[in-house]
Picture 1 (cartoon, rainbow over the protein chains, first blue to last red):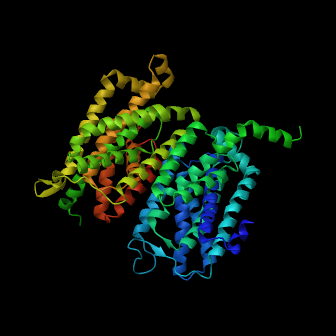
Picture 2: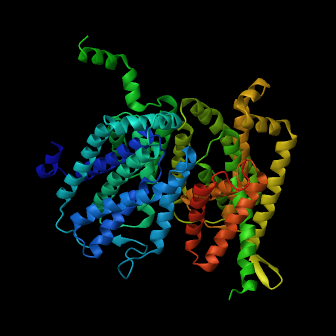
Picture 3: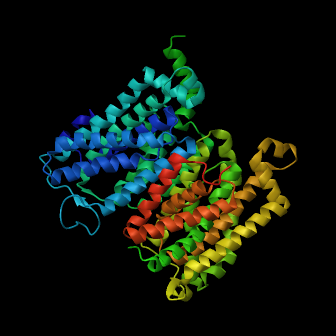
Length: 303
Length: 288
């Protein structure tokens, strides 16, 4: 049904927000995978997003057709994840968090300095413009985002019900015990890390496909992490539908406060703190505790 | 051939800069040492102090260092409140909760400052901040020397405080073993709040000196955090001396990196070093 929207001629502004919703949703789902299900407080998602976006856009400059660019961006992000996983997984807990925080910041500087293609700078910074649209209309881009967003939801469901999912849960609860039970901790962490990189990388390429302009500060910005974090926390860490609710609220806030970008984020920060203190399980946790939900469950299970 | 005489400038500047970095890292180190919490909002809180000083300078015409008379209490109270009302509760919720809450604070601060002051870079420009002094044939920015001296003063002051006063010893005790401290009659909740507040007071000082030395934007907080974290990592936890030396190592790395490579590569080199130290020896050189 959502796929039909662009064809039906819904206004561009709505499309933009729904587009953002799906992009944010996929990123939020991945953050949930990493933090909620695997216990990895990962702050390096902007690295994957930025890398995906840059690969796509630079690809258009070297004549790489856009579909290949998207795939390339995804793979670059995943490859990078593989690369840094070796040093980064030696870190535990908070050290891991800060280590992953540093990575996008470092990338930001690298991309400030590195100008692989093109002569003059566009926009006075180290920015790049998408060279050709390659026949991708806004509608196509929208559908791509839809696919990624929904795909991420199904991916999470698939992972959770698989052996990978149980293994990750074991690791999250107690890494030492998990290792003793014969779980290859490093490999499982690596899987979820790389999967997250793949999806966020792809989301990054599609986002920048639409925006058609990329520069280091915003692409590797910590804002991506904030958006994912707030979405997941509000909706419910570890809940499957948590990110969906959370992202809806986040996008709604963006929509309502679009003219007051700064206030929007302040409110999100306040909500984040409030939710953490009052309802750490987010909305889903809250709903789960209500009597109404429990009665529904009982009805559904036929008692 | 390396011109050693020319090398002296970045070396001296690096050491002096290290004082500033150590000062910034002190608050982070204190909070981490006592509460095992990495306050990811630390950088932004330091920036808050910079902006506060900027505000007093622009609207009241007060010299930034003098404005610390107001700045320190303000940040002290803010720190106390954050720990008492937010973090204390967060500790009981989950392991990730304090971190996420700190993130929330960081988010709020960054955007609050962005709204108030716009993303434009600001600086605490006072007449003496632009002065330079000379040792022999070389000239160095005066601000750097001021940073170093103030860092020394603060570090020594803090060390004596932690050793001699009751509160200081209580903080030490609570950081070593919370349960035993409780058994000995120490109100750990209040002690943590004071520790955080003291950390914020040092953040206030470092914020002013940071603003004197560098131009800052609302997003400078993140790089300050990484810097501070780098210092804490290299210097090791729980060691004031280690923090100081860690600061100098990073300061040297930055200035020498800027000398041998380019100015823009400075920060990148720092980040790479931080990552490297994290991967190789997370407990730092002096760490326990």
